[in-house]
Length: 380
Image (cartoon, rainbow, N blue to C red; front, side, top):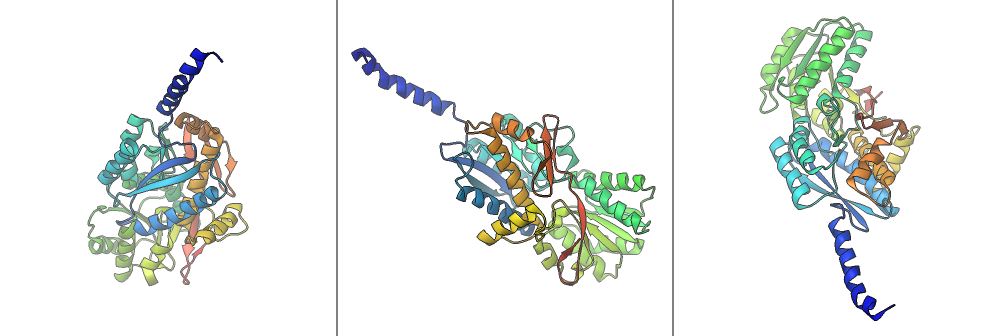
């Protein structure tokens, strides 16, 4: 090596290092991947959120114990948005623009997720597994959003199918206002299901997400005397209105969506939980005959996570995210990660099939119904 080359080589190597750092993807180092999450650790959905996060962290802990993904361990940075859309947006900005996370993971709530979409697009950051089944996150396909759970509308249609099979024709809907994204999905799914089974709605009752007068709403529902009632709402709103309906003598069959499915939900309902139907977007968490259920129980036990449908959703969501990271390879970029996810075609996650493409970011269509038994357990 010439004397001159020996003199300039350190500078060349230094410049190469600078360029490498300059072009490194946000949130990615040689041994770690930083993932951001804004979610309601407090607020009306806190119980379900807690269980869902336990399931996600159980899977990530198992992956990290085995060395991580392509030599990198996953770190989750979580901020509490108090289940408020404006706070979710503020948190997303902090995570993306200040903390420089690689991607966002598992937001919670329809208006909360919709609130952060502009931030994702502006910074070209993907969001994996938002815990919402909003149709607007599926159609048209959002380049930056990869759903895992099934759509809310599919859950409502499944309920109408069930009630129709039982011979129930007098079916009512209780949901949020049409300008609330969850309320709109509830209404559209209900109308779609009723039309499909040639039924006419007994009634459609609307109540606000914030500070609803549940006793007044419950009285209207009870006076309508439906055979069955579909409730599309979230967290403590759902618990409070079911309790109020039962307290005022309502005996109708009640069904609500998977966004309320947690052990905390059953606990909060107390004696009024028995007989309530919930749709589910994963196989049973305690079913050892399914591959997903068996591995979930092992991972949950290792970290002391709750065995519940909400935790199972978190576990499945984390598993899908990690599969995308694995497919992206060692040279991890947001682009390679998203292409890795879009390469997944009918991938069996242990009882749930997940598919993506550049034209479809739906993920899974799995929906089934469960009933809360007198012993406080979900029964298929």
